[in-house]
Length: 489
Image 1 (cartoon, rainbow, N blue to C red):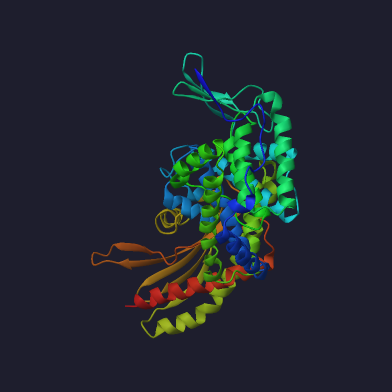
Image 2 (cartoon, one colour):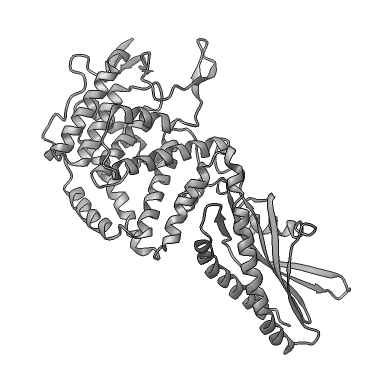
């Protein structure tokens, strides 16, 4: 069998072999200057935090796709990027692997990217230990990888996290063995890579050149038994973010260009890989325009992203603390009850102009009636808003009952959102009309009045919770009353 060395045993990894200035992108230097200025202006704007979190989620999702760990529907991927890596958003049939497996990998990769952003912001440098910890973080919820036994039968190979390979991992294709750095030289070669990278930073080498160089040299070493591609692109992202730019995001559309660029780098030409890095940065830069286009994000909304992360990371042994969200539910229930009661006299007066026998009042659930509206809750969640309704941990409702020649009921239900319970609940409203048909039979119809329920979390402060809830509540009331107005007769 022919051998094709990717790592040269005579030289080991080498520094950039041409003048780094010749490899750098003039377009990217202008992009970087503009972005650094705009980012400084947006530093205290919640929209910037939201944008950064979306970058982490997109990198996390695409990193698994390009590694063929899973497939995912593009529309669902976009929803996860925009709204968070929540189980209820990953619908049945939108991915080819079990939902828990896919979400576990995505969350690990997102967390690793978040840690990288924090490391850079805290002026952290690259180290051997950081690379090992990065590998462990990326594989936290992945126990095995696909392999074959001596007879060619498929089997699951246990993964070793954060430890250098103990045996050669040289792939064979078409009667050619591609050889990488042997295990005994991995530690020294990674140390050399880290030292050269720090020299690049000190010499102000363009970050796209730093990223392309480190990604390729890391792939030459191939220090881990598994996940070297993900770690290599995460290290390239580290160099780019440290240099003031964005994570290196590659999609399946970039796959051929990516492998061709690595092949060219194997042959001594780093430019195609630098160009690929630069083009990915230009694409990320275009997305920054969304920040100015987006409506301003209040401090509470910026904090909400952190709360979601906190809720996601709560361990099972802290379930009692998650249940403090039930206290928030009681707060919202009281707020709703007071607001609806305040509306009753005005509503009653208005309806009396239409017919006699008018009554308007507020009802609330108790332990004997909290199971009411379960069918409507499930229908509203599944068909109109789009989430999994969990009524096992918590359930309550408050309704505004209106009776004139017709009967209508505006119902606010509160229950769990998604599974498993993670310290979040949702307030989900609907409007219900009840009429007698010509045969004297009761006919009930449900009218959806929003596409977005109000989600709240166990570790929100009361005042911030209410400051988010009040405008949402008023929008729901306006929509419901407009619908009642259209159905007066």
